[in-house]
Image (cartoon, rainbow, N blue to C red; front, side, top):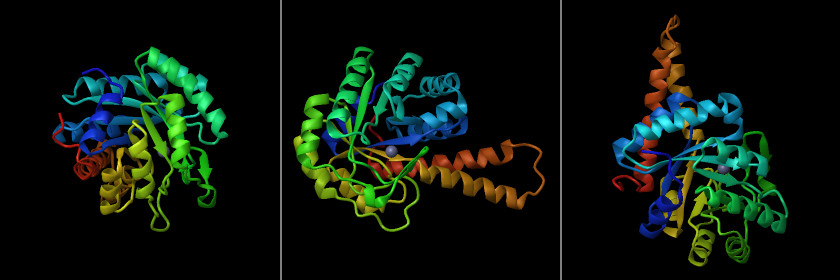
Length: 284
Ligand SMILES: [Zn+2]
């Protein structure tokens, strides 16, 4: 299959009370693991790529690997720019072949965020590309940007309604208490706020910082209306731990595939478990 926008898969998820997994890919092994897991679970899936990964891999590698993963899949696969920071970056990604983009204007004042997101939606929709916007600030570190917990802000229901009405984004990320990276303390996830916003905004809601959030909280968030959940850190940890185990037990390694294979298998199992938790299995 070709890469698809996230619009249809998220609308179905919102309607039927499950969530689509967004998993970041940083190399071929991550892409293979995520898409193999999605195919085995018969789940639509989103490959997330941030700007730091585009710098790390090169745009042509990102596009080629994602297209190859989609072509080999029997399930819908989207290639989604994660936390796009500016209009020029969005233009570059749409031109290169991304099927979906996120514009993160959450660090700007509300009206400026609306203006930037509207401009992105206009361009992206003309190209058949879906758009995720962000409202409020999510704590933690994403690529090179760090937001301290005390500075994280939750949007009000009125702000979310106004943002969605003005921008018509296909998905809306709202800060509701989760954070990027590893949690130091139990997050206070405001499922009540997700429910309030979800009942008044047609756009499916996105939960960032899904790694390490307890299973029952994830299920509550999905019941409240979260239709896309972003997971990265848990896959990174699974990859690091499994490859470290191989390296610890085999001091002499002459073939990198000996540990890359283990790392890839560990990501695949992590992704499969998330897909089942999110309820997106057997949806294709
Ligand atoms: Zn995020």
